[in-house]
Length: 164
Image (cartoon, rainbow, N blue to C red; front, side, top):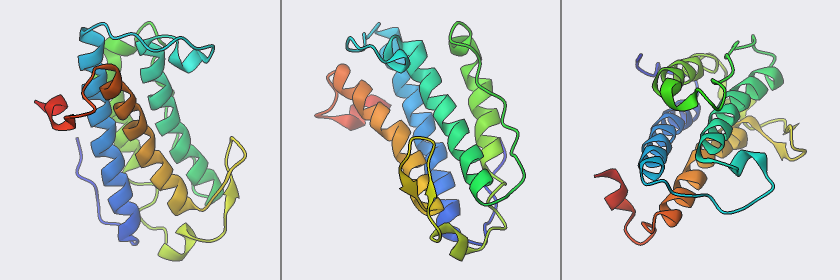
């Protein structure tokens, strides 16, 4: 895997780095939960019907955040391929995440700091975000699902134990 390059706006580099770190943390927790055959709560939401669909949801979201950011900033399409289908996701997870994170490393390198805070843009789900806030949202998304899995596994009181 390549190293994260320097950015004109160090705040963007920090968020890209944090996204990478927490996406891997989520995947490690997902693997633990999957091995323990943890069940997700009953829901009609297709993103939470199975452990595989949850993993796919997190990966599709990570892909979508960078595509949306590039669209809003009129940057070239990062051409990030969709993640593998649910039935193949477990066996292809490692390679896809490395690919996905590699696609995250360069699109924002030359974007000036001012473009990250103004203007705001309407997200795909109707909420307004500046680019900096969308990057923060992208960092928090795998953290939220990491926390969800930790709670389901009964590890919320000692989160460090999840990284043994």
